[in-house]
Length: 309
Image 1 (cartoon, rainbow, N blue to C red):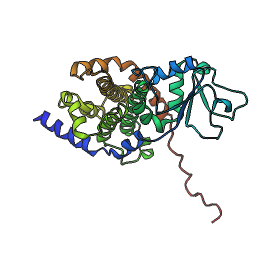
Image 2: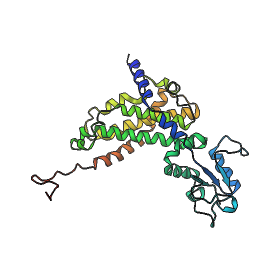
Image 3: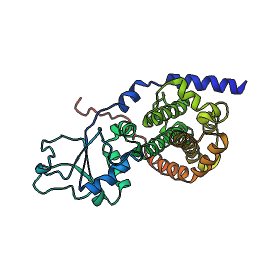
């Protein structure tokens, strides 16, 4: 009966997530160019399209020897949203352009992280179109969701640990544990979109079938988080549980979408345990930030803010 109830809750949560915004984000248009010496451009193109032959046409971007006008690079501002400099692509007499240079940033991974930092709204669209970016985008989606769930779990528990701070937290948040599972469902749909998979509720639900009734959503752990935890570790412990549970689920589904590695309870448990150190570190950092907030000071009796009345 318990598994049946969990399955019903699972379906309700999956169906409650609005897919329109995810679809729209994954289809956002952008203009991208790769500049640099031909032999260096090939290296970048291989990174973007790992399985595409070098001689293939790349319809989603344009290539130039440099950003110089004589190389044919458009000199109008805003011609491209993203310009990747594979090496030797800069030109002194060209119009100013924001370049993401492999040479200056030191590595391809650093270039990808900088692009994602500065264009977060293009993450899904970039990953959907360029298979070589899917791993970095997926890791970022999982980390961001895990951190958000850890912060929520800690804020949700905070009034019970530090009662004075209850006035700073919207009452609509308190006790709304469904948020954790909905955030995880949203993460799974975003991972699917990043891998160019259909955003169909039934198809994506089937992906998670092995976990329904056992580990999906970590709702049992969420219930534990609002229980009493003795001592001074309650706040960080709850955040760590939420982070590790969300991270494990996201990483399991990332591996499934990328490599076909089916998520099982044992694999999920291994990912959960492996993420605990990072979960504790993240939760401790969040705890320091939110417990440093002080409630507003009250005014002395007999005085108010309107001195001119």
